[in-house]
Length: 585
Image (cartoon, rainbow, N blue to C red; front, side, top):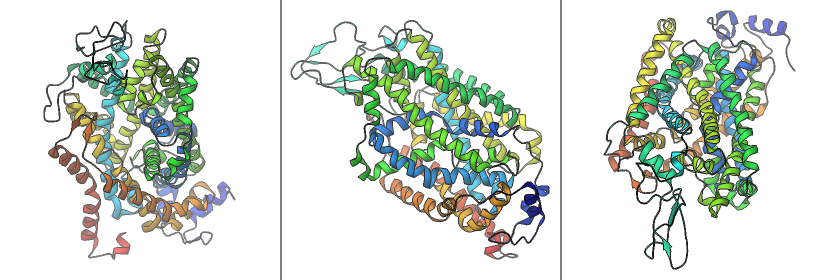
């Protein structure tokens, strides 16, 4: 039953209220008068739109559709929805609720459980590095956006200076011999005939990506020079980010209305256009055709749970920061349900957009759809541009597609940056008063971290940090520690009382069970699975990373995680003379 405003005010002022399951042990925190002054959202829609913008990103476009078709089609929705109910939503709401309750960002929120403040430091370092990594995807998107106005499109033909003798765009006769049985089509192969075959040929979209955009070197040990066009794009992206973030959350929320809503209009246009093409229906069937037997494979469940963690924007300091701008009695529980629903719907909807055009591309090339379907950069920067190049007025559709990608991703980058800034400024009033300068220093720092990824060997660096830092292990550790901190050390019952005080009603009992048992146990199982199955890194199935490269990746990940145990030791040593361990916790 919901409480009236008068009841809420009364309970705030009752130091020893008996109307809760547990006594109010943190009266000083829950009294609104004790909270620091903080800017708040203009209305509830600002919060919802910003959360949607933060969560809906590149992963919804290039990762979920591929995972869905690869792991059982429609049957994949079963583990996906279970993952949402047991891990995704409980952790998402936990972060929003703690941020709103403490009126603090990612570091300050851990005043609720000081011994685990090292989790916040770990997360802040993680987010700083992720901004550097995430921005590189924008760099490539911006370059393709600019190249979309060329006529003809540079990735649709072989008459460019960077094209090799192996390039084949379907015009003319390819070389024929009897020494090869494979024809390279977008990094996949197909058999041509039983006897007479076409020598290895490479699609122009592949060569555009490798030899013009990346100017890729032979390996991690050959970094080469900085690719100037990528450097220019990198500078432009960081300038855009600076002016999107510098004025604070009110300004960011206004930008979010454009960057979060406009892409849905563009995706609808792309879906309508794609649905009218030959082969579109086959693409959708291929995307959703259920394979129940896949559910017996543990890898399918791991793929579902990892995708939920990626797409729900948890463990990144963003949600606590956004929640901290809510008014104290905001019903963030209902708002988080809305955001989670939109997020999952966007992932599913994006699959329809992607696979209608992949179905059409497979129809044009007369190959199975699985020969053109891929995940990650290969889908966005090779397969999809090639598919759009086959359409009438390809420049328009390519420009629309990459503009959509840019708008979808920019919210995530803006709010990652904002989450980092808020976390630091909450513990340093001096930096808070110099927000613009602190933002400039942060931008410069992330720019320096991004710089190695603009070299000719930059893709190898990108894949290295993607695999070891952002492949899921660190995110799982952070989310696991969050549930332990609130569910066990602070106390789920205790926090439930605080939530009732804050939003006016007791939320579903299921969430408490998840915080205490289901979520941490589930994360622990999948974390252990990933650790025991991790393998040496490869790129493009042709380049195997040297051992020293893998060692660098492992060391980077370990250095980030070490902040958690080191801070626990520090907290115990500093306070051990005056307080018991229980009091420190």
